[in-house]
Image (cartoon, rainbow, N blue to C red):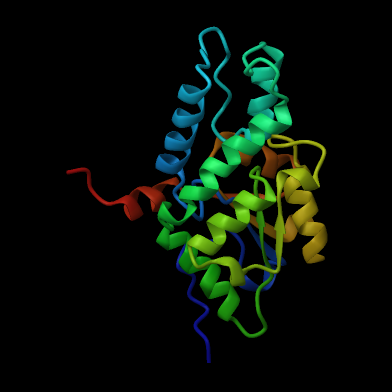
Length: 213
């Protein structure tokens, strides 16, 4: 008989949960270093100056950040936002396998997958499908989720609730029965607007990173 003890404390009891919805970047996989390296490379390659460009909130989808650059006239001359986005995503994909899994959160996904009956679980991320696929595959997590919702599946990114509501719909789970695993204020606001409860995984991520030496 499988254990019902969760690796992360959840705000609903097991019989109340219709689905778990996981953010990806910074929640399941620690993409901080990979994203920083990819962004630094593309900015340096194309000599892009970010002076005067508002810094987007943590959790902003890359496609929405590219739109911000375009609005401020900072894309390379003659390059479309779509092409710039493609180059940035390719740089992340090339390093995706280097991004470490955030083990306490991954353990929760494995726990849900191992229950009988299986607890429905989804990923809802501002990343694109190719990037999400590369990160999940690189972290050995790809087989744990019934559904993966990415930025191109919805009209609006976080803090709009679209990603989470789309995931709940695909899981056939009422929003109030879904628990969101998140690491950003944008994500918490998106969960609130979706009528879902959220767990802040940042303390678990810091434990996963270990002490600074």
